[in-house]
Image (tube, rainbow, N blue to C red; front, top):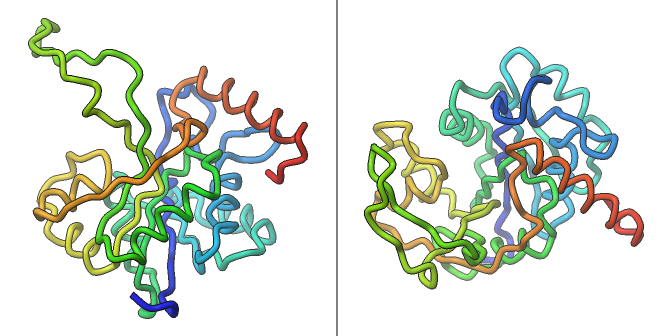
Length: 237
């Protein structure tokens, strides 16, 4: 890939986030006085090489999200489209909104608002270097058990070989489009899983502990604490 490669980020943000409790779509919940989605889009736009961010919003709140993001992001263009009923469908709709000159596509969970810019740039660099699919990962620190349908432990995987996957995940555009075009069922939790089914290698780069996903109320408490620490240090949020 050449230096003229353009990069876009797809941000599926149509999920309701029921595990976070009542209060509307998760991406629109407040974090330090600003919606989670705004934090995530700002993080993506600040990364070197990101030219466009496409947000897949809840179908009934597209205008609201468009107004929310207007004027809040200065470093990249932002487009808002109507998301689907599933994450996979939202990403597929975002891909349809990309200009023809975009060659690299990142997919980022809206609920990961604190991912450091260096992680984003690490992913972009790896895709530009020739890898067709790249994911940021962190080591698994807990012992993991595999259980059967009745809850009985059947195996203990060696955690030395295990990694927790984060986002943004990066792909060359053709690979990601092919993965979505050939997906038969919506039963994978990330886009790299679709690419794996094509028999394409997925490479890893170091992620960051602050790139965690806000899923439960406790995650929101942790995110607030990290955000407060950043602001105390004068870090832009």
